[in-house]
Length: 307
Length: 124
Image (cartoon, rainbow over all chains, first blue to last red; front, top):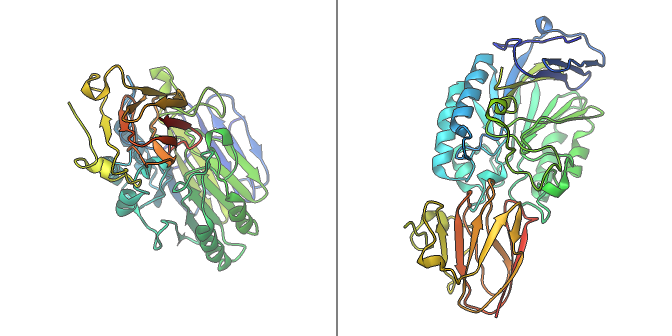
């Protein structure tokens, strides 16, 4: 069985589409490929969805080019057009906006992102902070009131937290929040009731996916401990250019597609570099995410650019 | 020939790591051919498959070591200890970075984007 839950302007023809309910219940559906569904309570369908939605774009890597690969500008432009059609309330960008942290690349990315016609909330990736600790990035995209660039905001009763874990990587390449940010997070969360739905977004995964490639965050444990008392916690990140999920109690973790290039499965090959795929397969591995929030639940729909 | 030096290029000026006064650094784009800055006798280190090859290199004082990024991913060169500090801006595929070592000693460096990539230069 495959229960396709459409939203916005998305059709049923995407090569791969799946939906996951975070928080209280889980539904997975795939359209195309092998259909698979898992439902833990709840019986929501698209028609019952009420609330608001937001979009996630990640790893646009403006400036990346390799061989016959289409330009990262073109694929981001395509992703933005698709996202605009979904009409989210706002958009988050989970980092690696640029490939080389240059002002030109940030300017190009900002121009293209205007196409979503919505407010965009950014956090940096390690490609956005090369050589200048993110100075250029924060000048253009910064929301943080402090020096570190992290911030939070509320939307429709949901508390959103943007964290920065790329400014000081560990010796093994893992992300790192640092004690100042963790103290801020603790204080920020302390003021919220446990029934407040929480969405955390940051660039590098907050769980250990493949530490040999730096796919994790060294000091995530205190942050996760501070989040654990909440009834609905959705943790969104980029960095690994593929969709991987993990559910742990009330907390769900989701990595996202890149709009620029795919990366290998964890540990497959010598390193996490761009995955070489046939040209006609590339867009099945790039994509965007649409998130519907209903009450305290977040439903995620990942759509590739191949649809 | 495009020649990037710390005094002339803002890209290099952006480096958080100050270059040692005695050192000189050059970043060369892939379009150029090997030229005077990297004669055949000068040591070169390939950045390939997320490693520095060779990972340990011994050179004589006054040598210019050139790193060449052969990966599709971005890498950097950033010293972590040694008699002089050195660091490159982001090196895209095909970019080169050179540094001239004027002081004897052991230098350790990493790629700041992938800090598990480590290398050593011994200057005699």
